[in-house]
Image 1 (cartoon, rainbow, N blue to C red):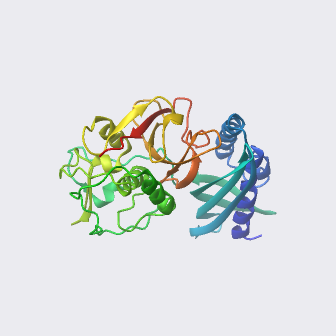
Image 2: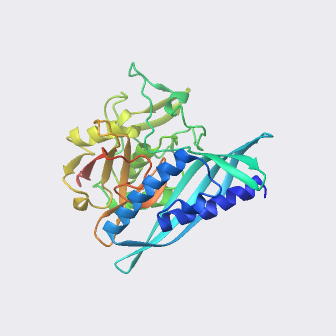
Image 3: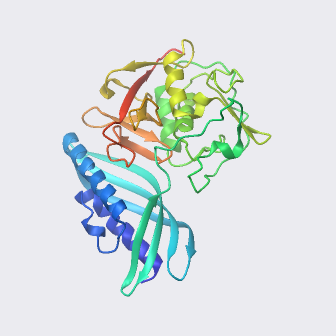
Length: 335
């Protein structure tokens, strides 16, 4: 068996994990105990989450593509892209979810085939955009998280139709959701795409829904985007940084603003959920609500780990912990 065939074999059995809530199917050819332990813990959480929701998984399919690889005599390292589609039944209603995941797989040859000795996620919701200490403009390379090994496609030019000063109408939730569903799995070339892209994506969705940019020209105030000029990124922290968008939405008194509600079922389509994985008061991830399940609970779209109609709690994410905190933001209708 070639190493590429071993990868396809891994992906085939990987599909069974979420169906069976067990790592048993990959044990014969995966020896990365750190991965197996974390995955077993994630699957226990997913099982409890699905039981609480009344979900029965019925199908999972994954398309694999090898993005790059390095071959040595004693091992192969491959960066792979996985496009995953999951289907489940809840209260006789079929629900589907999609994600795009990236992994770095290290394989070593054995007498009877290939052993997968390491599995590393290449994107997680824990990643943060690093801000300059002086509050100045970010240099182009500084806008990408240092640990993320691959750049995503992007266009450095500002879309001439994006006008920060243009007046906007009331918030159009349907338009925000339509944008989120159209661009959940890729970056819109009218905007820069960051490797840590969750808040940039949510901001684009809000703007598509009619939210007016508050263009101040200062990184630390307003909510605006102008793109890349002269090797520098021109956007406010609130446009692309999870924690900054949260506090902008809550503190804004005109234009785009939000009211915090107590529970996720109080939210509507086009609203925003913020995630603090460590419970330390710093929020690292944002999502936008694009659907609801049979129980009336939010399903969200997101970037970084690109997701469509994912259950809002993220308890099946490697980033989730018992300390995880949420804030539920209802976008005010009148801008």
